[in-house]
Amino acid sequence: MSSEPDAAAAVRDRYARFARDEAPGRSELYREWAAGIAAEPGTQELLARIPATHRQPPLVFAVTRLLGAPESGYPDWATWLHAHADDVIAECGRRSLQTNEPLRCAVLLPALALIPGPIALLEVGASAGLCLYPDRYGYRYRRPDGTVAALDPIAGASPVTLECELRGERMPPLALPDVVWRAGIDLAPLDPGDPQTEAWLTGLVWPGEAGRAARVRDALALAASDPPMLVAGDAADTIARVAALAPPETTLVVTTPGVLAHIPWARRQAAIAAARAAGRWVTIDAPGLHDGWTRPIDLDAWPGGFAVALDGEVLAAADPLGGWLEWRAEEATLPR
Image (cartoon, rainbow, N blue to C red; front, side, top):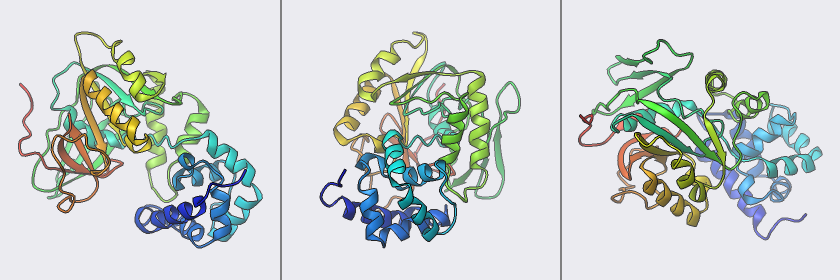
Protein backbone atom coordinates (compact mmCIF):
# COMPACT_ATOMS: atom_id res chain seq x y z
CA MET A 1 0.00 0.00 0.00
CA SER A 2 1.61 3.25 -1.10
CA SER A 3 0.96 6.64 0.41
CA GLU A 4 -0.98 9.29 -1.48
CA PRO A 5 0.94 12.19 -3.10
CA ASP A 6 2.18 14.76 -0.56
CA ALA A 7 1.00 12.57 2.33
CA ALA A 8 4.52 12.39 3.76
CA ALA A 9 4.78 16.19 3.65
CA ALA A 10 1.42 16.41 5.45
CA VAL A 11 2.74 14.04 8.12
CA ARG A 12 5.88 16.14 8.50
CA ASP A 13 3.92 19.37 8.91
CA ARG A 14 1.33 17.88 11.28
CA TYR A 15 3.90 16.32 13.58
CA ALA A 16 6.07 19.45 13.55
CA ARG A 17 3.04 21.50 14.61
CA PHE A 18 2.23 18.99 17.33
CA ALA A 19 5.80 19.12 18.66
CA ARG A 20 5.83 22.91 18.57
CA ASP A 21 2.33 23.88 19.72
CA GLU A 22 0.52 20.98 21.40
CA ALA A 23 2.85 18.68 23.31
CA PRO A 24 4.99 21.18 25.25
CA GLY A 25 3.84 21.39 28.85
CA ARG A 26 1.77 18.22 28.55
CA SER A 27 4.14 15.45 27.47
CA GLU A 28 7.86 15.79 26.87
CA LEU A 29 7.97 12.21 25.52
CA TYR A 30 5.31 12.92 22.88
CA ARG A 31 7.06 16.17 21.98
CA GLU A 32 10.30 14.26 21.40
CA TRP A 33 8.60 11.57 19.31
CA ALA A 34 6.77 14.13 17.16
CA ALA A 35 9.90 16.24 16.62
CA GLY A 36 11.81 13.12 15.60
CA ILE A 37 9.15 12.21 13.02
CA ALA A 38 9.14 15.76 11.66
CA ALA A 39 12.89 15.45 11.00
CA GLU A 40 12.95 11.93 9.52
CA PRO A 41 11.57 11.35 5.99
CA GLY A 42 11.58 7.55 6.35
CA THR A 43 9.18 7.63 9.30
CA GLN A 44 7.05 10.23 7.55
CA GLU A 45 6.67 7.85 4.59
CA LEU A 46 5.73 5.01 6.94
CA LEU A 47 3.03 7.01 8.73
CA ALA A 48 1.73 8.32 5.39
CA ARG A 49 0.50 4.77 4.73
CA ILE A 50 -2.09 5.27 7.50
CA PRO A 51 -5.37 6.86 6.31
CA ALA A 52 -5.30 10.61 6.95
CA THR A 53 -8.21 10.48 9.41
CA HIS A 54 -6.36 7.91 11.54
CA ARG A 55 -2.83 9.29 11.80
CA GLN A 56 -3.18 12.08 14.36
CA PRO A 57 -0.13 12.11 16.66
CA PRO A 58 -2.02 11.17 19.88
CA LEU A 59 -3.72 8.28 18.09
CA VAL A 60 -0.56 6.89 16.50
CA PHE A 61 1.40 7.23 19.73
CA ALA A 62 -1.35 5.54 21.78
CA VAL A 63 -1.56 2.65 19.32
CA THR A 64 2.20 2.06 19.44
CA ARG A 65 2.11 2.00 23.24
CA LEU A 66 -0.87 -0.36 23.18
CA LEU A 67 1.10 -2.72 20.92
CA GLY A 68 4.18 -2.66 23.15
CA ALA A 69 6.42 0.16 21.94
CA PRO A 70 9.08 1.25 24.45
CA GLU A 71 8.23 4.48 26.26
CA SER A 72 11.75 5.78 25.80
CA GLY A 73 13.56 8.21 23.53
CA TYR A 74 12.76 8.68 19.85
CA PRO A 75 15.53 6.42 18.43
CA ASP A 76 14.29 3.37 20.38
CA TRP A 77 10.65 4.14 19.61
CA ALA A 78 11.32 4.67 15.88
CA THR A 79 13.29 1.41 15.67
CA TRP A 80 10.34 -0.44 17.20
CA LEU A 81 7.89 1.35 14.88
CA HIS A 82 9.75 0.34 11.72
CA ALA A 83 9.95 -3.26 12.95
CA HIS A 84 6.18 -3.38 13.58
CA ALA A 85 5.00 -1.09 10.80
CA ASP A 86 2.30 -3.34 9.34
CA ASP A 87 0.73 -4.00 12.75
CA VAL A 88 0.72 -0.29 13.63
CA ILE A 89 -0.80 0.73 10.29
CA ALA A 90 -3.56 -1.88 10.59
CA GLU A 91 -4.38 -1.02 14.21
CA CYS A 92 -4.46 2.72 13.52
CA GLY A 93 -6.92 2.06 10.70
CA ARG A 94 -9.24 0.32 13.18
CA ARG A 95 -8.94 2.94 15.91
CA SER A 96 -10.06 6.53 16.33
CA LEU A 97 -9.35 9.24 18.87
CA GLN A 98 -11.92 8.54 21.58
CA THR A 99 -10.39 10.65 24.31
CA ASN A 100 -12.99 10.49 27.08
CA GLU A 101 -11.98 13.12 29.62
CA PRO A 102 -14.52 13.54 32.45
CA LEU A 103 -12.79 16.78 33.47
CA ARG A 104 -14.56 18.43 30.54
CA CYS A 105 -17.68 18.32 32.72
CA ALA A 106 -16.10 21.06 34.82
CA VAL A 107 -16.40 23.51 31.92
CA LEU A 108 -19.71 22.11 30.66
CA LEU A 109 -21.29 22.54 34.10
CA PRO A 110 -21.77 26.37 34.06
CA ALA A 111 -23.54 26.15 30.69
CA LEU A 112 -25.76 23.32 31.94
CA ALA A 113 -26.54 25.41 35.04
CA LEU A 114 -28.32 27.91 32.78
CA ILE A 115 -30.75 25.30 31.44
CA PRO A 116 -33.94 24.49 33.36
CA GLY A 117 -34.31 20.85 34.33
CA PRO A 118 -35.06 18.07 34.40
CA ILE A 119 -32.49 17.46 31.67
CA ALA A 120 -32.20 14.64 29.15
CA LEU A 121 -28.52 14.64 28.20
CA LEU A 122 -27.37 13.42 24.78
CA GLU A 123 -23.67 13.52 23.94
CA VAL A 124 -22.20 13.26 20.45
CA GLY A 125 -18.85 11.48 20.32
CA ALA A 126 -19.59 9.89 23.67
CA SER A 127 -16.88 7.19 23.59
CA ALA A 128 -17.64 5.34 26.87
CA GLY A 129 -20.00 8.07 28.10
CA LEU A 130 -17.80 9.60 30.81
CA CYS A 131 -19.05 13.15 30.09
CA LEU A 132 -22.66 12.06 30.61
CA TYR A 133 -22.41 12.21 34.42
CA PRO A 134 -21.99 15.93 35.29
CA ASP A 135 -24.48 15.46 38.15
CA ARG A 136 -22.56 12.51 39.64
CA TYR A 137 -19.12 14.14 39.93
CA GLY A 138 -17.72 16.42 42.61
CA TYR A 139 -16.17 19.76 41.65
CA ARG A 140 -13.51 22.04 43.08
CA TYR A 141 -13.21 25.40 41.34
CA ARG A 142 -10.17 27.40 42.42
CA ARG A 143 -10.80 31.14 42.15
CA PRO A 144 -8.03 33.64 41.27
CA ASP A 145 -7.74 34.61 44.96
CA GLY A 146 -7.02 31.00 45.90
CA THR A 147 -10.37 30.23 47.51
CA VAL A 148 -12.23 27.14 46.33
CA ALA A 149 -15.88 26.76 45.36
CA ALA A 150 -16.94 23.18 46.08
CA LEU A 151 -19.88 21.23 44.67
CA ASP A 152 -20.78 17.65 45.52
CA PRO A 153 -23.70 15.43 44.50
CA ILE A 154 -26.72 15.49 46.79
CA ALA A 155 -26.16 11.81 47.55
CA GLY A 156 -22.73 12.56 48.99
CA ALA A 157 -19.09 12.60 47.97
CA SER A 158 -18.36 11.25 44.50
CA PRO A 159 -15.51 8.83 43.67
CA VAL A 160 -14.59 11.36 40.98
CA THR A 161 -13.70 14.93 41.98
CA LEU A 162 -12.86 17.36 39.19
CA GLU A 163 -10.51 20.30 39.84
CA CYS A 164 -10.72 23.37 37.60
CA GLU A 165 -8.95 26.74 37.73
CA LEU A 166 -11.19 29.81 37.34
CA ARG A 167 -9.60 32.71 35.46
CA GLY A 168 -10.71 36.28 34.96
CA GLU A 169 -13.01 38.50 37.01
CA ARG A 170 -16.42 36.99 36.28
CA MET A 171 -17.81 34.12 38.34
CA PRO A 172 -19.71 31.48 36.36
CA PRO A 173 -22.96 29.98 37.63
CA LEU A 174 -22.17 26.78 39.50
CA ALA A 175 -24.98 24.31 40.14
CA LEU A 176 -25.41 20.62 39.51
CA PRO A 177 -27.85 19.85 36.68
CA ASP A 178 -30.89 17.65 37.23
CA VAL A 179 -30.06 14.90 34.72
CA VAL A 180 -32.77 12.23 34.56
CA TRP A 181 -31.88 10.56 31.23
CA ARG A 182 -28.54 10.13 29.50
CA ALA A 183 -27.52 8.75 26.12
CA GLY A 184 -24.55 8.95 23.79
CA ILE A 185 -23.82 8.62 20.08
CA ASP A 186 -20.48 7.41 18.76
CA LEU A 187 -19.24 5.76 15.59
CA ALA A 188 -17.87 2.96 17.78
CA PRO A 189 -19.25 3.20 21.34
CA LEU A 190 -17.17 1.72 24.15
CA ASP A 191 -18.54 -0.35 27.02
CA PRO A 192 -17.40 1.36 30.25
CA GLY A 193 -17.33 -2.01 32.02
CA ASP A 194 -15.05 -3.72 29.48
CA PRO A 195 -11.37 -4.04 30.56
CA GLN A 196 -10.34 -3.38 26.95
CA THR A 197 -12.10 -0.01 27.15
CA GLU A 198 -10.05 0.89 30.19
CA ALA A 199 -6.84 -0.19 28.44
CA TRP A 200 -7.59 1.94 25.38
CA LEU A 201 -8.83 5.06 27.18
CA THR A 202 -6.00 5.10 29.68
CA GLY A 203 -3.62 4.48 26.76
CA LEU A 204 -4.91 7.70 25.19
CA VAL A 205 -3.65 9.59 28.24
CA TRP A 206 -0.38 11.27 27.32
CA PRO A 207 2.73 10.23 29.25
CA GLY A 208 3.40 12.86 31.91
CA GLU A 209 -0.24 13.82 32.54
CA ALA A 210 -0.35 13.10 36.26
CA GLY A 211 -3.64 11.89 37.72
CA ARG A 212 -5.53 11.70 34.46
CA ALA A 213 -5.45 7.91 34.00
CA ALA A 214 -6.71 7.39 37.57
CA ARG A 215 -9.55 9.85 36.93
CA VAL A 216 -10.56 7.95 33.79
CA ARG A 217 -10.53 4.63 35.68
CA ASP A 218 -12.69 6.02 38.49
CA ALA A 219 -15.14 7.54 36.02
CA LEU A 220 -15.34 4.25 34.10
CA ALA A 221 -16.28 2.45 37.31
CA LEU A 222 -18.99 5.02 38.00
CA ALA A 223 -20.37 4.73 34.46
CA ALA A 224 -20.26 0.93 34.57
CA SER A 225 -22.41 0.96 37.72
CA ASP A 226 -25.20 2.77 35.83
CA PRO A 227 -24.41 2.53 32.09
CA PRO A 228 -25.86 5.13 29.72
CA MET A 229 -27.57 4.20 26.49
CA LEU A 230 -24.87 4.28 23.81
CA VAL A 231 -25.85 4.18 20.14
CA ALA A 232 -23.55 3.57 17.17
CA GLY A 233 -24.06 6.03 14.36
CA ASP A 234 -23.14 9.22 12.54
CA ALA A 235 -24.11 12.34 14.48
CA ALA A 236 -26.12 14.12 11.80
CA ASP A 237 -28.08 10.98 10.92
CA THR A 238 -28.65 9.72 14.46
CA ILE A 239 -29.31 12.70 16.75
CA ALA A 240 -33.01 13.07 15.93
CA ARG A 241 -33.69 9.33 16.32
CA VAL A 242 -32.04 9.10 19.72
CA ALA A 243 -33.45 12.42 20.90
CA ALA A 244 -36.97 11.09 20.23
CA LEU A 245 -36.38 8.49 22.96
CA ALA A 246 -35.92 11.10 25.70
CA PRO A 247 -38.73 11.53 28.26
CA PRO A 248 -41.14 14.17 26.92
CA GLU A 249 -41.22 16.17 30.17
CA THR A 250 -37.48 16.87 30.01
CA THR A 251 -35.34 19.55 28.39
CA LEU A 252 -33.19 17.77 25.82
CA VAL A 253 -29.59 18.98 25.79
CA VAL A 254 -27.18 17.84 23.06
CA THR A 255 -23.49 18.22 23.91
CA THR A 256 -20.58 18.10 21.46
CA PRO A 257 -17.53 18.51 23.72
CA GLY A 258 -14.43 18.52 21.54
CA VAL A 259 -15.82 16.13 18.93
CA LEU A 260 -16.74 18.39 16.00
CA ALA A 261 -13.09 18.75 14.97
CA HIS A 262 -13.11 15.06 14.08
CA ILE A 263 -16.13 15.41 11.75
CA PRO A 264 -15.52 16.54 8.13
CA TRP A 265 -16.71 20.09 7.42
CA ALA A 266 -19.93 19.28 5.54
CA ARG A 267 -21.04 16.71 8.10
CA ARG A 268 -19.92 19.04 10.91
CA GLN A 269 -22.40 21.68 9.81
CA ALA A 270 -25.10 19.02 9.49
CA ALA A 271 -24.34 17.76 13.01
CA ILE A 272 -24.66 21.27 14.43
CA ALA A 273 -27.98 21.75 12.65
CA ALA A 274 -29.27 18.42 13.99
CA ALA A 275 -28.18 19.30 17.54
CA ARG A 276 -29.93 22.67 17.43
CA ALA A 277 -33.07 21.17 15.95
CA ALA A 278 -33.24 18.51 18.67
CA GLY A 279 -33.04 20.82 21.69
CA ARG A 280 -30.50 22.96 23.52
CA TRP A 281 -26.90 22.67 22.30
CA VAL A 282 -23.77 22.93 24.45
CA THR A 283 -20.34 22.67 22.84
CA ILE A 284 -16.61 23.07 23.52
CA ASP A 285 -14.77 23.92 20.31
CA ALA A 286 -11.82 25.84 18.91
CA PRO A 287 -13.11 29.35 18.10
CA GLY A 288 -12.31 29.02 14.38
CA LEU A 289 -13.65 25.49 13.95
CA HIS A 290 -17.09 26.32 12.54
CA ASP A 291 -19.56 29.12 11.95
CA GLY A 292 -22.19 27.84 14.39
CA TRP A 293 -21.68 30.77 16.79
CA THR A 294 -24.48 33.34 17.09
CA ARG A 295 -21.94 36.09 16.47
CA PRO A 296 -18.39 36.10 15.09
CA ILE A 297 -15.56 35.49 17.57
CA ASP A 298 -12.76 38.07 17.55
CA LEU A 299 -9.84 35.68 17.26
CA ASP A 300 -7.29 38.47 17.86
CA ALA A 301 -8.85 39.21 21.26
CA TRP A 302 -9.47 35.58 22.22
CA PRO A 303 -7.61 34.62 25.44
CA GLY A 304 -6.70 31.12 24.24
CA GLY A 305 -8.26 27.74 24.66
CA PHE A 306 -11.59 26.59 23.27
CA ALA A 307 -14.97 28.33 23.33
CA VAL A 308 -17.79 27.03 25.53
CA ALA A 309 -21.16 27.93 24.08
CA LEU A 310 -24.87 27.44 24.71
CA ASP A 311 -27.02 27.44 21.56
CA GLY A 312 -24.11 29.09 19.74
CA GLU A 313 -23.75 31.92 22.28
CA VAL A 314 -20.17 31.93 23.56
CA LEU A 315 -20.11 31.92 27.35
CA ALA A 316 -16.51 31.15 28.25
CA ALA A 317 -12.99 30.29 27.16
CA ALA A 318 -11.69 27.01 28.50
CA ASP A 319 -8.91 24.48 28.42
CA PRO A 320 -9.95 21.88 25.79
CA LEU A 321 -9.78 19.15 28.44
CA GLY A 322 -11.38 21.16 31.25
CA GLY A 323 -8.40 22.25 33.35
CA TRP A 324 -9.35 25.95 33.42
CA LEU A 325 -12.32 28.20 32.65
CA GLU A 326 -12.65 31.93 31.99
CA TRP A 327 -16.28 33.06 32.09
CA ARG A 328 -16.91 35.77 29.49
CA ALA A 329 -20.70 36.14 29.37
CA GLU A 330 -21.94 39.56 30.38
CA GLU A 331 -24.70 38.07 32.49
CA ALA A 332 -24.57 34.74 34.26
CA THR A 333 -27.87 34.53 36.12
CA LEU A 334 -29.54 31.22 36.77
CA PRO A 335 -33.01 30.80 35.23
CA ARG A 336 -35.85 31.08 37.73
